[in-house]
Image 1 (tube, rainbow, N blue to C red):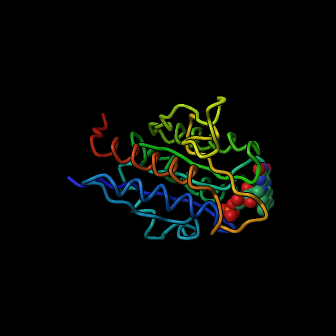
Image 2 (tube, rainbow, N blue to C red; image 1 turned 135 degrees about the horizontal axis):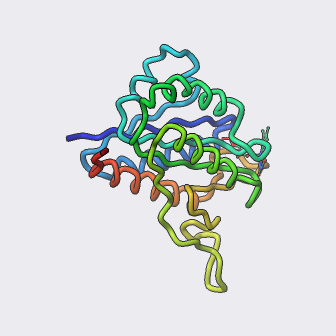
Image 3 (cartoon, rainbow, N blue to C red; image 1 turned 60 degrees about the horizontal axis):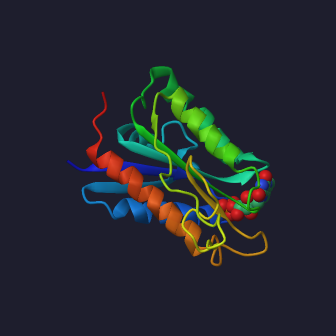
Amino acid sequence: MTRTVCIVHHSGFGHTARQAAAVADGVREVDHVECVELTVEDLTDADAHGWRTLDHATAIVFGSPTYMGSASAAMKRFMELTSERWLEQKWANKIAAGFTNSGSQNGDKQNVLFEFVTLAAQHGMVWVGLGLLPGNNSSGGSPADLNRLGSSLGAMAQSDIDQGPDDCPPESDLETARHLGRRVAQFAHGWSAP
Ligand SMILES: Cc1cc2nc3c(=O)[nH]c(=O)nc-3n(C[C@H](O)[C@H](O)[C@H](O)COP(=O)(O)O)c2cc1C
């Protein structure tokens, strides 16, 4: 049976979109799992087809740039629109995961992942974390390490603010995003909701 992993993200300038594409690449590495990529712009209308895709997905991965230490306003708008689903607990027992990208190494981006964890919990979803030890945290480490930003809750990426999305986030962050996609897809493949 084929399972669907949906990735829904916002990206103002294309950097988080590259991270989202890497998550999708990871999902597609897993057999019997299909990946559907949506942007929040696809979901501004409550009747948009994308909502039904989300309703039927086994897993939903949320992604946003970090703007002012929070998910972007466009992402927050989408999060609020999900309240219709929340009322019916329509997404209960789906798998959830998340990713974020910011300009600074820290940039308060963990807060975005907390926002996604809270969103998922309100919906009764089951959160899947990154499942990687931190990289780049020892004398032998390097910024090329997987999970170089040392996240646990989800995938983090950092994009220099004077570079465009063709140049960042770096490959280590994209590989970390691929790892998250693969991991979510592996869980989705074997998922049996209670
Ligand atoms: C309105 C705004 C607020 C931002 N706030 C933060 C912030 O709180 N922390 C940070 O590290 N970077 C911040 N940034 C930088 C973005 O996170 C960074 O440029 C990111 O790569 C943008 O991703 P995008 O191209 O997908 O929009 C901000 C950028 C904008 C436009």
